[in-house]
Structures are given as C-alpha cells and as structure tokens.
Length: 471
Image (cartoon, rainbow, N blue to C red):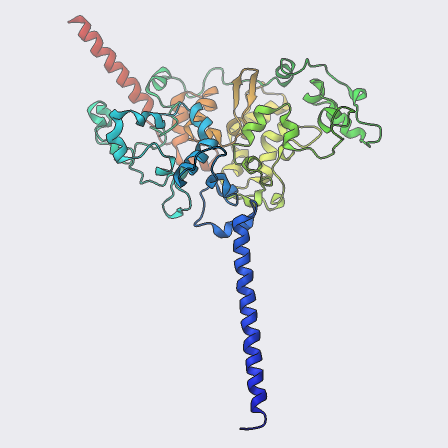
C-alpha cells in the first residue's frame, strides 16, 4: 500500500459524506417546501399540490384549496363530496335560483324520478362538473359526455314529433336547451316572441340615473360644487382633481371628499388609496356582482386582485400587471363611465372578439351616442353586452359580473339583445360560430329553429283543442 492511499480513502469518505449531506439537505428543503404548501395561506405555493389543471372558471382561485375543500363552520363531520357540494352551492346557489334552475336537486328527491338518478346522479354537482380532469372537460366545465340529456329524454319524440331524428348529442346546442338556465328558451317565451323583426322599432337600452337611485337610498342628493370640497387642510389636493370630481355623479349626489377618503372626526383616518370595500359602501349591488365574475372573484376569495397576466385570453402586454379593482375601469377622480364602457376593456383585452369591435355597427352607434349625434341608450359598447343594465328595486343598475350573461350565452339574449333585436334574430346571432370572432359584426348565417318549432307546437295544440271542442 502506498503512503498516499489512506489519505485518498479519507478524501473519498469525506467527499461521500459531503455529497450525502448535500442531497439530504436538498430533500429536506423539498419536503419542507411541499409541507409548507399544505398549511400555508392561499398562495402560488399551493399549486404544487394540484392533482391536475383547473378549469377556466376556477383557475384564478386554484391556489386557495380551502375555497372548495374546507367544510363550512358548524356542520357535522361531512364527507369529501359533501364539502365540495357545499362549496359549489356557496358560490353558485344564488345564480341557480335567479336562473329558475330547470334541474334543481329537489326535482330528483321525488321518488317518481328515482329511475333517472340511476342514469345520472343529478343531486350532486360533481356528477357533471369535476375539477382537475382537463382531458375530459368540455365547455361550461362539463365533464360528462355530451349525450347526457339523451339518457333521460330519449323518448322525447313521442311527445314532440319535431324532435324526431335529432342527434343524441344535439340537445344542449346553442339556441335549443340548457341544463340549468332556460329563461330565454322556454316554449311559452319563444312563442310569445314569434314574428318579431330582426331590429325592433324602438331599439334602446334602459337608461341609468345614478343620482335618482341614490336620492332614494341612504341620503337625499344635494349637488356639490368645487368650493364645497371638504378635504382636510393638511391634505394637498390638486385643483385638477377637485375639478374632475365636481363634474361627476359623486358631486351631483352629494358625495364629498371625506365620503370616500375619510378624514372626518367621527370617521376613519384619511386614506389616499381606496379599496373595493370603500366603493361597496354605496355601490353594494355593483361590488357584489363584480366579485362573482372573473374580474373580481379573486377579491371575493381573499386573494390579491386579478391581473391581465393571469388571464387565459390574449391580453395586451402593457397592462399585464395592473390590478383589477374598481379603479382599473373607473379611475379617479372622473369615474368616466364612457371610458369604462369601451376603452377600459380594450386597454387589456387583445383577443379577436375584442379587437373586432371597432369595425362593427355596434361601435358606430356607440360613437354616435358619445358624440351627441345619437340618442341616449342607442349606442352599443362592450359594457352594453357584458355588463347588462337590469331593472332593480332602485331603478336601473349595471350588473358588474361580466360572466353573468355568458352562463349560458342565451342569457344575453333575454337581458341584452332583446332590448334592440327580436328573439329569433338574437338566438341566431348567438348560435353563429362566426359571430363571436367578429364581435357580432356579421349577419347570422345559422338559423336556430327553436322559435318556429315552439310556435308550430302551440298552433297545433290550439288547433287540436278547437277540433275537439267542435265535436
């Protein structure tokens, strides 16, 4: 043995020990990282535990595992499926009630429908909508084969001869039927609107009157002027900001500086930066609806606001990291609703649908209204369709859930399109695949037979009744 051999052995052992410690430390760090991910608050670190890609409807909140997997407080120990069913109802229950759900779970509690439960457990949301299975996730988050209607309605042609020969997977196509929301597709509704022209004679949107709505709410509106601004003396406010404020509905409704920013003796300290909660003080409906849509759902989950960089649709790079809160579309102190209606949308959205808007008749009508050459309510902006104006207890208000009229798309026919168009035209347009790409700047090439079929069915039924009465 050479004199250098013991030293070589010692060196080899030391090197092995060093490598072992290095690998042990690395594995400990990895284990600590994933362990922390289990107990950490909602953050990107939790995505390491995702069993699969989430749907387009939930990808924004995928780092908040507890949103779907944590049981409600005070409940008896639930099963895993009960926990997730409860989570579905917490977020979507009000939407189903508003839609007059065609297939509520209560319908299948009826013993006469027990045989249908064998084909489809329609009492559980997870039967049709599972998460983390991207290889079989269809539109609207459906994870069942598209022929699910057929299993219960395969004999429909016996009562509806018009349906004879239709494909087994054609039930839930655009303009025909939806599983939950059929408010624009019920036969009586279709028949009531049979024969309407493509463009209605008085094509106009409901008009907003913010000041009138506020005047019957928490206070009587008293218009304010520039000299009425009540910012504390130690707060430096530029004349431009005060001038902008004086021209807004806030000033017209008597909402002063301290009404939003605080600073009064009996109120919170002055704050330059306002939150969504501050706006909610007066705009409760708008903020609540904002947080049920994709723009605001992260805020509702207690996460940082959405940014365009997190979107699945193409977005402009220049706005990638801007936060989507109220000020993203209503920047102070002008709170310009004309800017919010189009320009705010197109600052971020770069998909083909958005980019095609400027070349449509709708855009021309909007430009005419903004310029004053068109009548109020005749223009069609991005917000016209995606933030529909609804009749409420306090007059007309704007639904800020930009997904509400897309769950399903036929919802837009009733809440938006029918302000200006006949139902038949609206359903044809929404069913036309080219319409989405061109931002509905094209004449519909596809015809949906739903309105005609409903009218024919009612006509035939009335004819049979008259014949029977004459006998």
